[in-house]
Image (cartoon, rainbow, N blue to C red; front, side, top):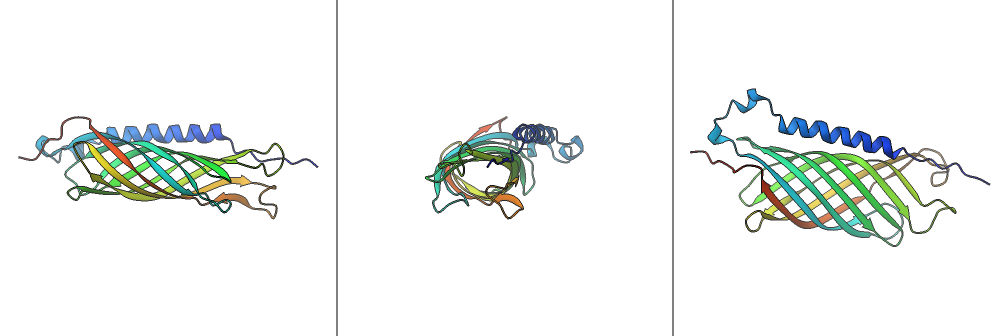
Length: 213
């Protein structure tokens, strides 16, 4: 008996993710001059880049065990005299367990607010996810991949100059299309992993922040 395994076109997803990244980056960098003109130069706080990495504990939504791994990413944030600072975020996660290994590359928007040393945020990300099986469901069937999106949030906490502690939670939704092997009753093969990350962020001012006089 032979099986025809669905294979979601990762090249299309990666191309889509790259396009989203480019568009969002242009949007973040090219803030309309009409909005910028509403604030005096001394009121603008400019831009910064934040790189982060941390330990990730992940519920893969496949099998009885949990996964452990790392997450890393970068944020590009624009600051104005507004309650919310918009960011472009790109992140990757690689978490392994005894049943499966799950990997994601996601990009999207983040909104952050500032309360003294605490910087809570929410984000919405989308991209591609892959799941590699420790034991093949059938011989030769090692991996599935498909579209993944994530909604989550967390808080960055100031430690010392430019360094922050990070606590982050993400709820992901995966859709890998039709799959007659793992979903023989019909319908799409979907997963809903949850990930908690504890790590460190390092903020790099793109230009010096200017305080209001």
